[in-house]
Picture 1 (cartoon, rainbow, N blue to C red):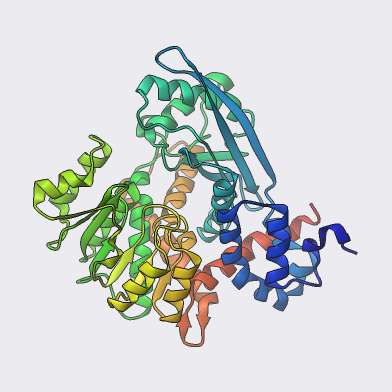
Picture 2: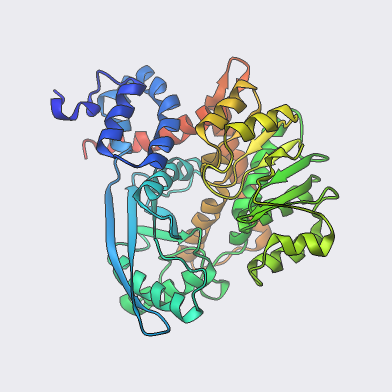
Length: 456
């Protein structure tokens, strides 16, 4: 008999509204987490009601509660000798199908709501890859921008000193995310190695010299383009010849742009926090090489690209008003809202594939679905990054390294398989609802493992 004080756990009243009311009561002031759970629950709860074994075992209630949430103080010294204090986190969400796996984010916006949304989303994303990976997410409100390399090193070492108690190659294997690239991973890996006196694959996204994997930098962007290609192929179409709008200018956006170009599409936009470029002639391989150097080496702004190539630069704006066939939001969460979605639909956009985590608002997704536009949710479309992280774990365990060609073939195969899983459960009155398909396919594998373990 459910406890009346925790009626959000009731099996007998598993309506969407009742479930969400209970979740919000237990997790107040966490809007990003609420949004992520609602998007899953909306399609999974009807499936659970059709399969009472999941309802009776309280699987969705258990799945939305992290296994544990770790919060800790990070104390470090800046170059002027001042003591600085940040907050560190690791949300270990679910390890039913493998060690916790998910990125570390260093950004001033980091809080529990964002990390819980990312960790919850990771549960389904990692399940869809078919690789044995659980789900976690972590990070800090530390901002690497404007810090010297030595300051970043000291912070990373202080952060790992505490995090090292909670991770391990068979327990929890973090990776990079926003603000955490190869440099930060290297500093943290070195500190873990010093503390634990062992060389082991405890982090992914490492440099090639000490256990990193080829294609990891490109993986999320490449995977997003491959997923779009599979969605279009399912509808007897392809990227070839399509005008594409891409947001962002980090690794995801840049390498999504590269793979789109290789598949015959024409990318006409990229964006950063200051605005976006519109290059009507398309961003070809030479221009992209300039951009990769500009954004990853020089840490410059897209306005410099506009000046160099004489294209339009729209300060303080987002690119969704540019007419296109395909759209790839690759910047950050909730960057594409309802008004943007309506403009894309009105301009004839045929398909959207999310390269970032939850870049489209719930209202925007509703607009796409009502217009029966092809829409690939991030938990499926951007799973390429964590897929190659999983392949890095495999390579570390086997003490070998695969070639770039073999890894890209494996990545493409995983994205094709993810599409098949989504298509299996996404058919809905002649419309392929990839959100529903991804949520149900990701849910089943984790839920069945949880059922097998019994009540725990």
